[in-house]
Image 1 (cartoon, rainbow, N blue to C red):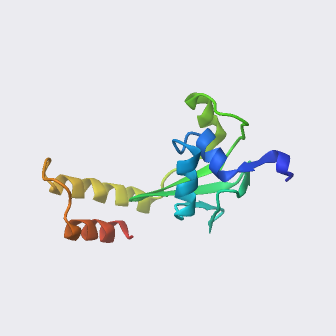
Image 2: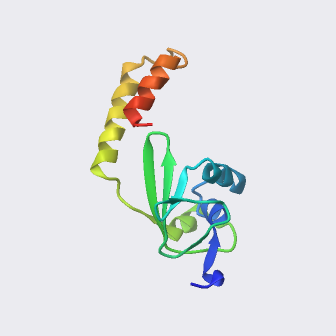
Amino acid sequence: MSDENRQRLDVWLDIACLSPTRSQARRAIEAGHVHVGGERAKPARLVGIGDEIELRLPGRVRTFVVRGLCEHNVARALARTLYEETPPTPEQIDLRRAMRAVKVLRPAGAGRPTKRDRRRLDRLRGD
């Protein structure tokens, strides 16, 4: 595929509205939260149609397949046509349910989680 049919990863994440800004996309990529084709990526990595992008958020992993490229920012509705999100795996669904159950255990207004609470959450998430 030629470079004309490819785009920088950080730019694509911003245009596809998967990141609020390009600089935040770059920080997420450099922190190792974004993988392309199963490998850790760099902000300048070129992505093209058909590439699989994995976005690792706290407690969940979202996987997208690039379906289009765009030169400039577009409306969010049009940006959604640039990718296709793959359905979550059964393990990811179970993890989401477990995370919701943990939230119920903490009463509202109880303040910030303690270090012990955060470690328990990290173990539950598998971090």
